Image (cartoon, rainbow, N blue to C red; front, side, top):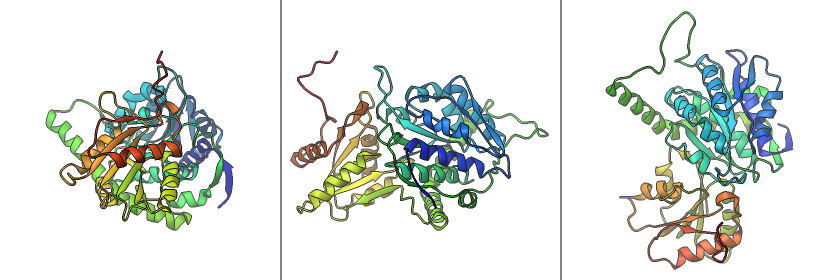
Length: 396
């Protein structure tokens, strides 16, 4: 398996391309693409890839990019696209439709701050605004995880026990434009991992049908229940796919939730994406001085891994949730789901929200030390704490 020094965007582009090529003996590949900083490198990569069967369709907007991908998927092609920030906002109607159509589309999203004011740096608010749209969501820490998770996404999405679209997310520039050594699987290995797509609701020319028409209330309710049941099966199906990935590629893509030094941790920090890298180093340093601190990295956000998170925090007395996002009037999104996870299970657990790294702000070891100092001093949880705000700085 060759190792190359590539960016996160290139890792995503490679994974999307070889996954699409793996469907060449069936209905091939097709996708709609539209550029937006900082994901443009991804769609440039797939546009140059020499697919044996299928095509990449440049369109005039993000909304149309998802429309093309939905049409391709409905006709049995392996479909994907990529976007970011306000592009996702413009695409959102069709993102919702793809979820409720149960189409196994994979989209790579480069997390960027939603404007205005205009900002191209990392913030998870763009994908988290889509959290109720029946898509699985994964948040990646580095380039290798982007590549591996994107390949896993296709396998999960196309499994008939799931049949839901998947978002693979990475931090803008910190991952998308940073070059690191990345192992690239051979096409033959990807072919083994991703069988031909066989979509049960595929449209057929000789079999007229209506998709997405009017449904009575009881029919709509049944469809929502089926989505919920599919979401509940994700943890078990993910583990099956993970095991097969390891067997084929010789590399473990990692669990849905990843822990570091949590077995006896009294203080636990919950983080996602690149923040987990910094937190891990702080935990390692402070563990050397005898402090009982641990890290829980949330790779999977939708469905939220409730049982795994409760198990990871079994010895914790205080939990800090680091949110690189903000839901207006409600605090951090990861914090909201973390609180709900422990409600009725651990009423003794203090869970505090820290809004940090928003709008591309740096999350440094000093910031993590400040969070730990605040968490250690608390006797009860309070309102979300905004980190990185200069009290002397006037806001225009």
